Length: 182
Image 1: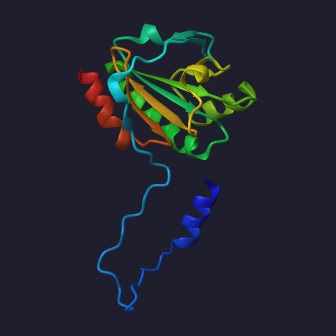
Image 2: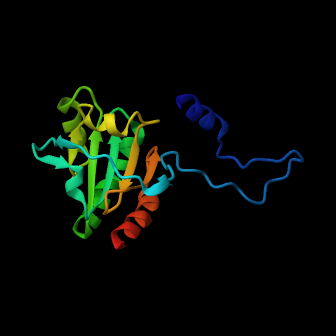
Image 3: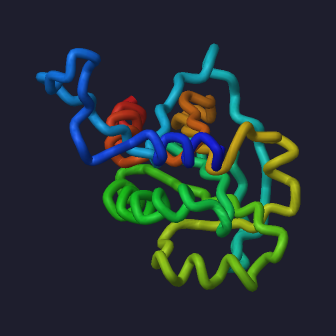
């Protein structure tokens, strides 16, 4: 991943590209957001696997008790740069949609536990429930192909969308709005 990013950086330039004849191109390709991953529809609306965990605030979170809500399940770590990029967007989404039925669960896979997770939560003023996974969730939703990984579960408890990599509000919001209306 780092090699790909390095190659992408080393191949980019602020100068316009020239074609072989030396003339300037008439259009420039849009630059991609390096922290934007697409959401993919889950096949066959599979039922999300239930779990019960203790949150960092001491409360219990049981997925099956969230039926009637849209649940965004985000697997992340403090050492993950894209996770730092997407966390403020989750904070904003939760503020905007929590009263309409959105629940977000942040699932930290940091082995160092609270010593690294608490400062991260404070830095981004995280306002949604967070768990430091002891393997309970990763046993059901892992291994993931990368971090962060995000799942969106509908009001009936079916897995509807997933993304590997950081997702933006632009990608998430239309799906969340769609599922909240169902």
